[in-house]
Amino acid sequence: MAVANKNANKRDKHGKKKPGVTGLDKKIVATNRRARRDFEISDTYECGMVLRGSEVKSLRESQVQMTEAYGRIDEGELWLLGLNISPYASTGSASFGHVPDRHRKLLLHRTEIDRIDAKVTRGGGLALVPLSIYFIGGRAKIELGIARGKREFDRRQDIARRDADREAEREMSRSRQRKHYQ
Image (cartoon, rainbow, N blue to C red):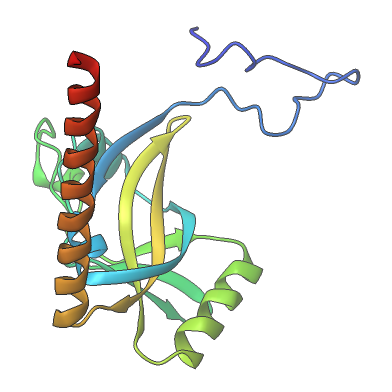
């Protein structure tokens, strides 16, 4: 068994693992780049997902589409709607597969769900948007963000800021090259 980092097996004097030392790698399956472009993300949460076996196999093959997905709190539970996980290709028949775009329950602590519910209901125009899906230690996780939609001029400002930063970086690298050759 390979250890991700050299501090993964550090233990305190009582034999318990030291906090902050996990040794688990993060394997990103899918990211929602559109969410970062269209929304302004304020807070993020890492949630577990309740999945069937064929869904996990499909996720490992990155057979997921999350551009239309969103989160919703219903009767004190957090749900993910609109996430499309394609059926696993090697399943013998359709009866062993799964429904591609069913509602999936997300796992969070009660206090975090209450905190999210308070922010979303109190703050007008906020939404729960999935940002990425990944595996940590063999468990599927989803990063969920509390987001506010950007307006068109906000997007234009972001593009202008990015272009200005890129141009400034080019000029700095050009000046460094000139100094290097002199």
